[in-house]
Amino acid sequence: MTDARRVYPVILSGGAGTRLWPLSRALYPKQLLPLTGSRSLLQETALRVESEDLFHLPLIVTNDEHRFIVAEQLREIGTAPRGIALEPIGRNTAPAAAVAARILSKDDPEAVIVLMPSDHVVADPVVFEAAVDLAIDAVARGCIVTFGISPDKPETGYGYIRRGGPLNGVVGCFEVERFVEKPDAATAESYLAEDVYSWNSGMFVFKAADYLAELERLQPETLAACDDAVSKASSDLDFIRLDEASFAKANSISIDYAVMEHTAHAAVIPAEMGWNDVGGWSALWETSVQDADGNTAIGDVVLDDVRGSYIRSENAGLVVVSGVEDIVVVATEDATVVLPKAKAGRIKDIVAGLAAEERREVSEHRRIYRPWGYSQDVDLGERFKVKRLVVNPGGQLSLQKHSQRAEHWVVVKGVARVTCGGETRDLSPDQSTYIPLGEIHRLENPGDEPLHVVEVQTGDYVGEDDIERFEDIYGRTKKK
Image: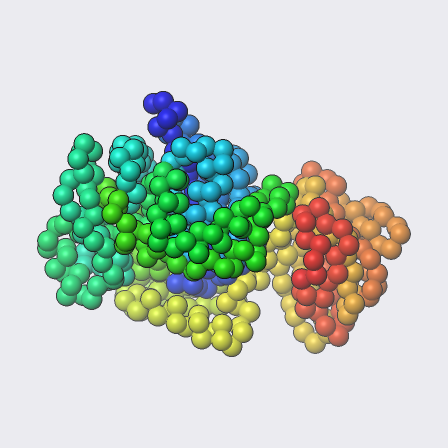
């Protein structure tokens, strides 16, 4: 296969995945979770495009909050991305695709892109690769290609594509007659019977220049905003930080609404690639290993007379379920959900209600990942908070101070290098130190194994926003 037939993967890693709450949360959404195996959905997506014969290195489009987690997860699987572009604000898939197309076109004006969400499952990567290879031929004829998934049930949660006649010269590819919104149950049944409809997979293959030309015709203001965001972008460590003021002017619109439903160049390749968008707990149950009674049980779970259910304990201790069927039970350290599997989609509205109440559980877990490692809340009371800090080898917290709290650090494992005031010293396990209120300080790990520290905060206010940073190797010098 020649280099001319290699494509540039663009992996979109945004969104909060609220339909999989409480496991998926805004600061650690579903694409970063190992939902279907030992690797996260993002990692599985990146590995899907690792063949050097067909794919260039991937470009990732994500946001500021997830940037270090994304970079670390890619490092774990040995993937060195072509770049990681940071959206300052969510603007849906059409602007994200435009930004990626503009970035890649700078280096390769003939760039062909395969655009993929990071949170979908593709069980048969061989079929996926074959579909991409076929799409290259259609793109050479000026098409913007989407992959259609042959429906096996009257699904009402997906958009559909009605295919037209065969695309001349590309066997297995069809013109798109029309895109169809999510149907009601009766309409979905009729689509299933007609055998000319496919589910819309949300994956696309196109020449960057062709997509940009169509977006300029259909959404000129959005393209102008994206172009400005790229031209005014800055480099931040290994990240491409898009200009916020410019990107905010782009319409928040999907590639389907912005381009695919209006272009005369849409084509579809039906593909049986074992696709699932993991759009909720029922969808995750469908893709998971089930026992003889149709149950998926993950974690410390005991089942008694249970059928057709998804039961998961995520660091939440023992979960016992008895005498039920077709339900979802998901327990985490700080939140538990129990609901009928058939009504699992209601979780999105429930989460919206919790967000309106400003519940912390909507956005974050007790374990919060940082570029240096992670912190985990252990206890919280009046005028105190207890946390566990795990600092990666070579990692260091920013040089900082707090105006409303003091801190006590106890080293449990590893070596801690502590800067407090003008003094720096190393602490070993079972040693401790005190950081007075208002004192400039830093914690770092000079060793080659993770550093574990228990932190006790005391003061009138122990919120995470009581921090002033003076130096930071991760570029976080603004007050949070």
